[in-house]
Length: 381
Image (tube, rainbow, N blue to C red; front, side, top):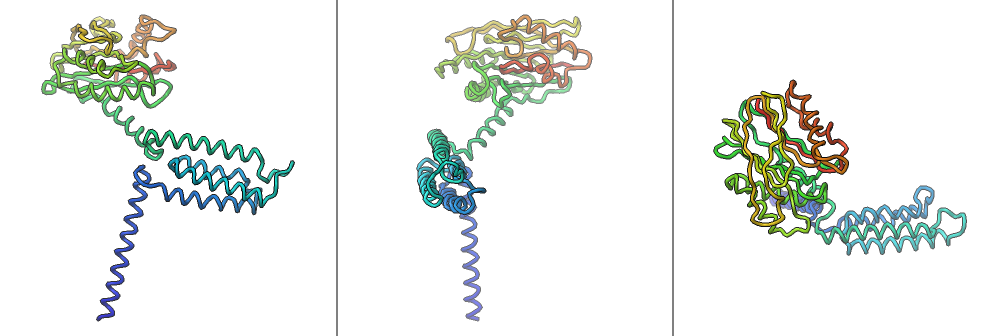
């Protein structure tokens, strides 16, 4: 009985020890790939790989040339902190010296030995890795987490740009194309149903700049505008947004914006603009497109700005298009020409309907334009 108890106790202790070891190793791995843990595991692995590569170079230089030492250096530039990276560089330099001694001094035609070019290549790669590691350390975001953070930011922008569901008889869709095929754009939309769901409020904004240059400001403004939308009376939204931009004191901090307030019961709407291109309404009764625009200055230019609205009504069969200037205006094309081209392409969807038309309109009107493009369609069936 005593022996059995001791055996069970020993077995239980071993199980507990193994469980703690597995838990600790798993936690260390998770922390490392999240960027919260130490890099000693990667450092040890890379330090062990250096003598292994050096030994392979001495044994079979045909398959493992001296320049193969750039492999752990490249990996170290991605995985290690600057201080740890210097240790790896020291080990790599020592390996080059050992290879030189073992293979003999460089002579012309002895391609398998450590040549001056090999030293230059290894040194250049090491310098590049150190620059990347120092930049990563200064930013405070390790490479393992950086890509995930960018992915999360992109998904947040997409979620914020989603339009709320509309009651039967209404259709809305949004298409966004960043400049240069990038994932981030200076154009964004925020929308909400207010007044007990009877009112749809949509704000389409174009931040100065384009692509990645405007992405950070676009993300910040989309969050701020989303908080303001529905919390203020419609006529107070653009003045509050203008004040917010002024308080940021950005060097290039202006933006254009258009604010739609639509009564989903009657179809009556109010359109307020801050230096934004006009909206276009298709009147089903006449088959013509009409420009709809309010009056107001750019956001973030001066305080106390006034924003005057224009009113209209969406009747059955009518369509309202809101867009940013990248869709209708460029260095080679004036605004009036761009509007004519957009309405001409949009006329092709009058008979078949505008479901799924937003993306195709951007493709046909401004596919190769090096600017952010956004198009919002509101249709009353």
